[in-house]
Image (cartoon, rainbow, N blue to C red):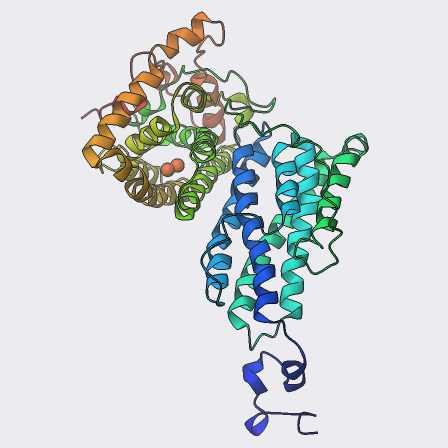
Amino acid sequence: MLSTNFSGYKGLPELVGLHTMNEAMSKGLTVSESVNRLKRFHWTAKRLSLIFTTRITAMPVYELKMAFGLHSHYLAEHVESFFNRVREMREPPYGMDKAPHAALDILLDELQNAPDHAFVLGAYEVVIPAFLKGLQKHIEDNNKLFDHPTYRVCRFAAIEVEEIQDYGNAAVKSLITDDLRKEYEPFIATLNSCLQAMGGLDGTGTESNVVPERYFSKTPYVYQGAPQRDERFKDLYNMGVNAEAFLLNRDIEPLPKTIMLYFKRMREIDVPEMMASIISETPDKPWGYYKDMIRQLWDESRHAMMGEVGFTSINVNWENIPFNFTWSYLLNTKMTPLERHSILYFIEQGLMPAKTGKQYEWEVAVQTTNQLTKLIQDYDWADEVLHARIGRDWIVPQLGGQNAALEYGNQAWSKALANSFDDFEANGLTKHENWWPEVYKKACEFWQVEPDPQILAYDTSYRESRPDRIALTE
Ligand SMILES: [Fe+2]
Ligand SMILES: [Fe+2]
């Protein structure tokens, strides 16, 4: 047979190396089979991405808060690729805004409504593995020559879904005890019966067509907007140390400002907590909106972790610093999603001026001559420019132009903050303790320098000023 030991010119791989001739002759799915699987991947990636996002605010464990940001971002980035590939395959442009199988929505609703530990178990031990298996099987079953664009879409998605899976395995190992596993057996059984009903996540098995009974999703989902933190975080309403006033004071030398830069970065845990609320409570936007917002949310998570890296590098245990969540708390519980987004935009626009914004922070970092601090601020600055653009794309048009958006954001920010400093204190939530001297002394130990008495005495809180209203001292 001609196909036996088939080879290209002078032994060049046949069919550009995608398949042997025999493979190309014998395998492949029809366009409609391929489309059916892609539609399920599309819906899974889309909803799962939003489900990871909505859980960020009320997830107390810092590491998982950050991981959900990454996993949400990975999934969000592949939604359009699946969608576009389906559209390329003679598929009419409707029907992709709903679940391709009723049991898939029950499966995802169950994850959305599950308590934290059940979610970790169900997402990382059932749903993500089923998704990964589906992608891998599609690659395996497909004819890479005939359906090459689908092969690429699935392959790239599989790389990142596999990374989610790897992290998920570690998360389950760390957090799921035998007791929890026992407690959530009926929930896991519900997830598995959803998968059976739909013939596996990719639909390649036999559909049982028994509509599974809901377990956690019998009652409608309610978004939890009050931020939660784990027990390592203390004094969550403490607004006692004004980092901006310190950073912008030209009389203070660069090195101690390192601490305030790291503090500002790690305090950014509150940005994903807040952005998750905007995304969760703003329905019916084009997918590009969610994709961009989730990308920014993940960037802000990275900024927080960059701060964690910084503190660890100077041997300061961040558990001894109060990272207040007052910003995400006030915005999520007192402001509308539109007000929150306008405040975010207003603050990020305020970071653009070279003299007082991100460029200034980077210049301070350069002056410290510490390579790590410089890198942290370099990327923080670059990301912030992108975020200002995301704001211009999505919130400015909605509020009637740049000036109107800034004015709206400015007023909303003042309204959100109002008398919160005094109210938190009056309500016994904090004493706004000055944590600065202890942390500064600890860093000086690492730097092997004597604390400067004047810097040690720094005692300026956020009582009088909004963080963005501090001028650079000349
Ligand atoms: Fe940031
Ligand atoms: Fe940002």
